[in-house]
Length: 321
Length: 121
Image (cartoon, rainbow over all chains, first blue to last red; front, side, top):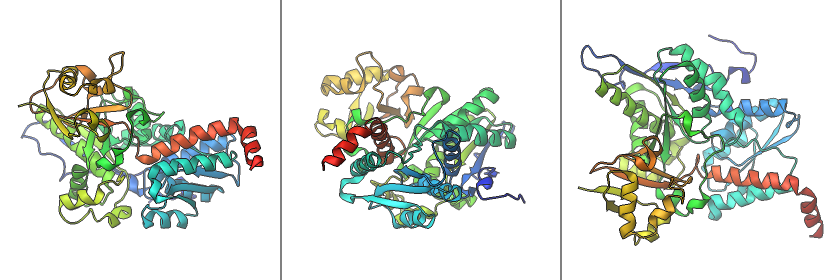
């Protein structure tokens, strides 16, 4: 067992485990096709976002943007907020999260437990109101520091310097890397590193396709592509619907005993697609994918039980990844 | 058989409210031209004057992003399913973060003006 000086030092270095039961069977004499899961839920707060949060805070410290006692403002109710709250606590900063008042109570409790302060925007206004509230707060507190994970190069660099090297060390025969596409940090950083080191590596994105409510009111010109995104790093990009994500999330725990969140189900769906293609083409494949977080925070959705149709309805209109 | 095309809510004004329409074409570009003949104006919302897919539009053929399959030249077959979606990143909070940051940058630059406005209240 490893020993660390502090929790922050225990970030990363996550296990890579084979999935012999989910890996497709190949015809006799054909080259092996294997699936490997990188257990990012084993990070200090239970998600892959710990890597980005730690690197973003360190980068801001080194650049002199953050000084002891400073306040970090981040509009997030998700894993990044939880990771930042932990890092902020241990490094001596105050964290303020802005989120709509109708997010799940688990999120609010977790963030408060880690010491974050929460400013709620009215539920009725949804994310548009959260935007307005965050704008107002930022304007009132120009000395507060927003790390802005969607455009912060330290987010991608965390994966270039840690996730990528760990994968190559543990799986020198890697042929495919599959991860979720949100801020794009994981895919950009890990993808760039692996492209430099592994000839022919396939970097595959799995993007969650939410229920219509999430896209419903947007104008196309209000769309957003993260500043970190560089399409040339990717080989392919899959859109994975709610039903497929739920199905794979359940399959992962039923078949391999890994209890993960729904974004991981979407990632597994894409990983299985490329694995089965390799079998069809008679090619060897070592497909590594990311377990982004555990399923605990999503139990209250009810989507782990009942029929797939029930689960799909339960997640309609929710940002499940 | 034809190609099934899923239309996002914000573009259904071009399809008479239909969520799903059918079209034909050997490539995505052909398909969009075919759709535009019955749903005038749709193509112009998806393709720029320069002839590329609009930056904030994602199109998927059988769940795979066409930008990695040749974009408007992506080959299509009967029975394929095409999905059109606006680009969003990491959920609604992507927008919140982006909007708040641009405001934050502006606010730092315009702090004097802001302080004056606060004082006026």
